[in-house]
Length: 328
Picture 1: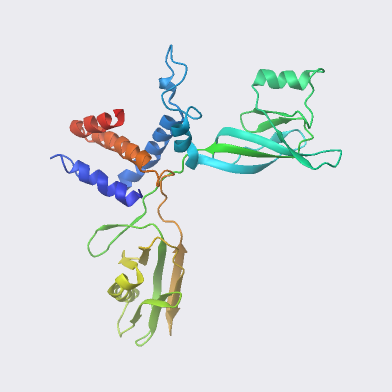
Picture 2 (picture 1 turned 90 degrees about the horizontal axis):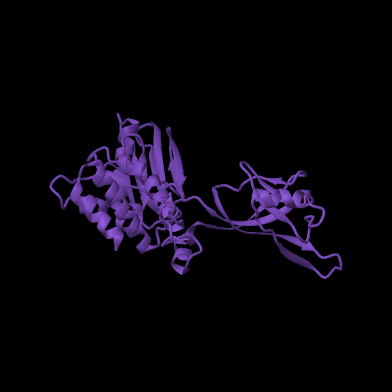
């Protein structure tokens, strides 16, 4: 479920109540990172679920197959950590929780490389291993410890390890553009945009293409401004949008080409004469939830959003409905 579907569904539910209504996309973008982390807490294991007499929470990382499936989009494949001469390595980007760690040990008998597991221990055990003379860490028996700003390893001769970990959830953002004519908010995920800087002279042309496909073109007429050229270009692209699967929106500053097929537009703009422009191709204007392909998770996320929106609007029926759905 992509963000445009989330947005439409939220507004559909809210319009069921007389005091409900559309939420501004700017407001939705404020709530999205909050609800992403709230859902992340739920599937990783809420601290408040650890109650007296209950060893484990109802849902949490490593408890069952359902938990594993929910966490799966946040699992990062092994990344290489470089360890300095004192045994310190930086945390990888977006790190939240360790999964597994190993390094490749070259056997001295030339029998080939061997993967050695690197266990993580608490501070007391790490300090014990660092000072003991009976159980000294070695390349065959290494150890690691989580510190405030880095990961510590013993022995310090380790140079490289491979760490799998759980990352923090991606911050979702619903990208949109406001149509200068209708004031409508148009969802944008992937596409390109073109900004005309100078309109050139009468008879000059500007053509927009994707590969060999012409999206639209405009010929400058006497007296045209840069805005006039963009308005004409915008209209030209939309004449054939059903055939090239690209929608054009003019927001008063630039012509935004929205790729309705969700593939990456590589825009080519060919001006003649004195027409000058800036163009940008983008693979990502919106940032989706990590769980966009998990319908069950997205339903939970939508219910959390509805509960938060109902509270902010004193909309008790919506809040009660969302809370009830989450209890199922």
